[in-house]
Image (tube, rainbow, N blue to C red; front, top):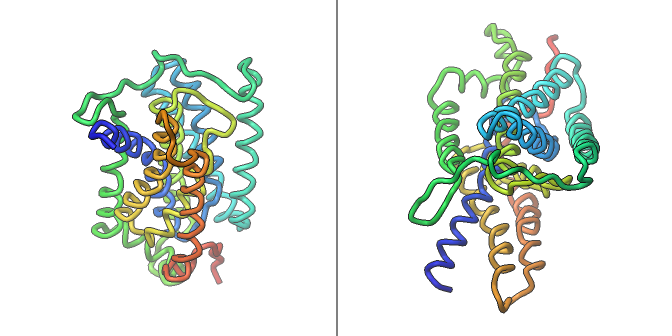
Length: 297
């Protein structure tokens, strides 16, 4: 492996890390407040589609904003159903995933290219030239966001309130905290980060939209949350690890002589996900009220 190969693998890994890391950090915020959203796959898929359409109409930054708004809207819907209406969080998340699959497939047909839509180069966010090659500015956003989230959760009063709502909502309610409002804001913000990650895929990275563009990244983000133990900095590390395994398959595809089948390497992110969930989930301490709708006595 040459030095150029190493730089290429690093560059691809950093790009693959972005949607997983942003989505995982957003989910950490939501789970800290007590809501567990498995609809991240749908949020990534729908925001990737909406972000691409937005970028074509108003430019790449507008496309990213549209993706964030769509993700935030899904997070808001999820939160309303599961806080004010006391819904079942697992079922709601599955519903979001199924809705996204259907609406994106329908939208691609309406655009005239069933299953695929190419994003014009003019609508893609320009890359920055760095020592490791051309990279998306969104990589730096994904590197900074976990540190901001960590500071927010560990060093601010709002972060303390968020933890209190997830750990002991009854006590927080007695202290005058609006439990449902805090959870709604946390999940909406988490959805916005997932939406940003989805729009990034179509507008800043892949340059197209397919009906399976999310490719399990929402579930990998959930595994990253488990791996991190709700620590945003470890989520950054987990996002890079999963991104590395995804990029390794992409890199092997380009080799003239492939030492091992790239299809096998492409399985590794999902195998690692299963290993993480099965090996770590029993050791992670989640908020006591996670997944439980709050009902005032």
